[in-house]
Length: 394
Image 1: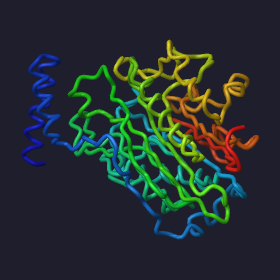
Image 2: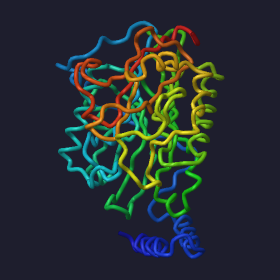
Image 3: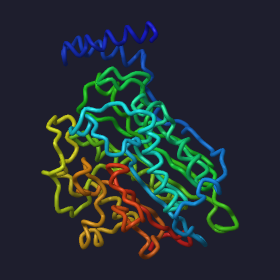
Image 4: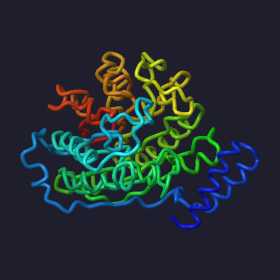
């Protein structure tokens, strides 16, 4: 550790000890200005790009899989993969005390994620909570690993939590974020910052997650999509631990970026963990799978936020309509805090300016949906659907 970082750690410990006093504010300002742990990201910047080096035929050999899409259709998928932590009881969830994983645990969980991807055969997938260089996941680059073990060939990555060293809970180095994996080449990709949590003090903000959106434009093959040269993808993971207006502000930013694709006439999909239940959800608080009592980390309270996602439903085509959700709510739930509780709430979404093929959208909750169980692979269930790029709207 460099001398500058040691000095910053001393400042951080001092700031913690004096709480929210004026001295804490001064020390926090010093840490922010020096950025000794490299947590800062520009408001807008280039995403990190990847390209697979192995044969896609070899990657999918012997794997059971769905039929590939044909014509002017794209199969798209979104999935919060919990940094390949499976259902280990981490301290974040309130159930356990684990912080770090062994390399063999990470690789086993990555293989479970890759198996589902190989079966479903998406053309494009949005993933949230993906680590590329984190001590908690043995410094394994998950984006690179998934590219080399699935049929997908291209990827873009945007950090949401990045620091050379996190001094709390033994976390150490963190680089975690969102990624888009694709069959098709990436024409452009950039990361754009979302608003920070307003109620956090500056010291907490310095070390905490910095939510962002990943904007990707794909170059589609002319022989398959003669009238659609480009396809846009927006992938994000909005704030969970906030009780004020941060999430609502983040949703407004996402809507603007979606509108940007639409105004340019580019077909697109947004796949994200929005950390919000849909309008009309029967339960908005008091979930029985939540044991976290610290208000700063209580993420399952949605009272008074009933309309916050309405603008997405009003402007674009949801993979799961509100009518479908109202009639079959249980089959579209995507998240639970612990492996002993089946899916308790829907937090994951896909919206598009294209038409969803009839009957194509599935929430992969269990073996009946995908051929293998999914509860052990993440604390979120993936969603998959097929888009028709033959025309916009319904």
